[in-house]
Amino acid sequence: MAAKKQTIVNVVLKTGVQPRPPVVVVVGHVDHGKTTLLDYVRKANVAAREAGGITQAVGAYEIERTVRGAEENESGEPRKITFIDTPGHEAFSAMRSRGATIADLAILVVAADEGVKPQTREAIKILEETKTPFVVALNKIDKAGLGGIEKTKAALAEAGVLLEGYGGQVSWHGISAKTGEGVDDLLDLILLAADVEGLTYDPGAAGSGFVLEVKRDPRRGIEASVIIKDGVLRRGDAIATSTAGGKVKILEDFAGRAAGELAPSAPALIIGFETLPQVGEEFTVGAVHDPSRLSPNVAKKNAPEGRVAAAARGVAPTGASAKNTNTLNLILKASDAGSLEVLSVVLKNVHAQNAAGAGGGATGAANKEVRIIDESVGDITDGDVRHASATGSTIIGFKNRIEKGARNLADAQSIEIITSNIVYDLSKAVEEFLTGKRGPAAAGELEVLAIFNQDKLDKQLVGGRVIAGTFRAKATCEIMRLQQGADSSDAPAAIGTGRVLELREKKSEIASAEKGKEIGVLLSAQALVQAGDKLIIKK
Image 1 (cartoon, rainbow, N blue to C red):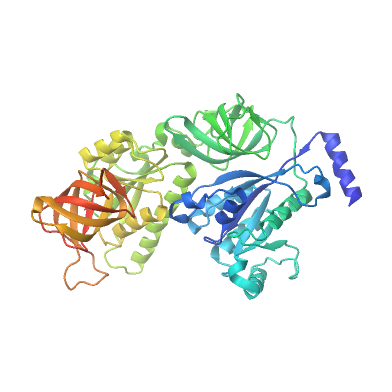
Image 2: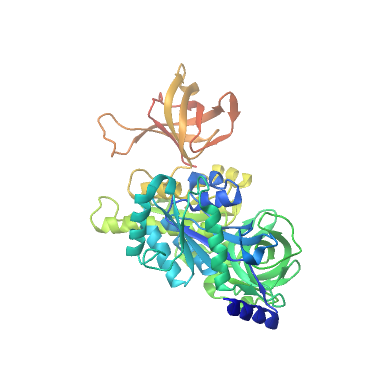
């Protein structure tokens, strides 16, 4: 061991390279505790801020850790570890693969009370394909007990992962991400694995790394989250990927603090790209971007607003398609490039599954289809609304907001805008259109729970819960009712229309309410509303 250590020291002295912290990706099945583990490590509750409790974007975080009893660290100086948190749901497969490619090491989190699940197997496959070294964290040992741990070890062996003490050499540790039991030992295991890998960087090299995430901020412009892997990245550096270029005008660390320079393996946020780089690309300091070398598809993505002409997608720039009740034209907008990728994949999968079902004889679904007219990053603007009007499209927004001018124009032109922070709410709305449960998805939907006052049709006071989208005041709604004798599989029928005069939450008047809110509604309608009815805003 001493000879090996001396060799490493000689190499460092000879080449001038320096050791760098490990970049670690956390992978595993949904709900097995990946984000909870990072919450404990960072002492920050990120999971509570994630819509629906599901991680929906790639985030990178840096922590410091002092190795207990480490001979090389007798000074007590902490060592850094960079963690990449990846989404666990099956729809986020591409993002997980990208994270594993960028990382030096991985933690495969497996819940000991549930064992190996489909996304556990997928994560193992990705780690094998990318040749990423990994350790296993058997989570929820407080719930599983010894029997659950042994059962999970056996299941991992069947999946090709042989743990130490179980016929293999893959290091593992039992933890409880909730209580913190075993987490310190797991972090020590990560740093030990990093030492074995001998991770280094060259301070004299041009800064380089990988693009983790990209979004368009309405005030600051294009924001790129990156991981630095070699050299030093400084404010003012010229920077380029194969598809985009610019200058580092603003450089921030993972906590949003301004930085003059950052070294590997730091997460960083860069503002200064002139066009959107592609997620997963390598960036290099000093490289010159040549737009003439872009492929046609990438050039379209980097067009202003990310807009793709309707004609290029085979859709005539008219509103005629809006009259076709068997086609739902969609314009997709998301807060960042990774979220847009996921939204597109999820909606295309909904369409593909419906088409497969229709081919097998599903009644009334064979001719229904979803057409994605355009995809771009950013908030929903009046330009998106005009594009939707020209192509007869519905706008789907994921984790972004609607600009005031866009909202007003959409109301005036009867353009549907559906937004949510949970991608599966959006896919459900599209799926209901395809399966014939109702027409194109609603912008907001409320289930009536109670009736308070119905002395006048034009001033009905009811209480209800928002079950989809955003329910807004001053909007026209459709009143839907399940007919007497119908079963739960039947679609409700329209019994009239109304106008939402006022919304109240507790004693305060509000302009809108998101999914899950229980509110009071003052309604002017053509018919008396009943408990169980649904009020649907179509625009």
